[in-house]
Length: 102
Image (cartoon, rainbow, N blue to C red; front, side):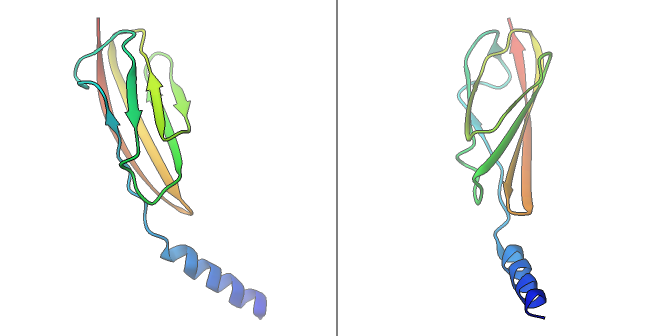
């Protein structure tokens, strides 16, 4: 009985955690990123999280796990940038498209 009570209390506490909010900023005009130009992505505007998961969908897909990321892109085209933030069993995400030009 005590185990069930402790489990219920822990589930209640977990459900009370605030929902995270996902956002990120860049140092570039997202419509005109040049090949090999360093792009700084910063998710410090996200809230209620300490866990970050970035995915970059382009010719060489990649994943990062930190609040701040620096990327360069070697090919022209569109790069989908996806950020997932997590807090306990709750998560939030956001995505944007970068246009890489010569």
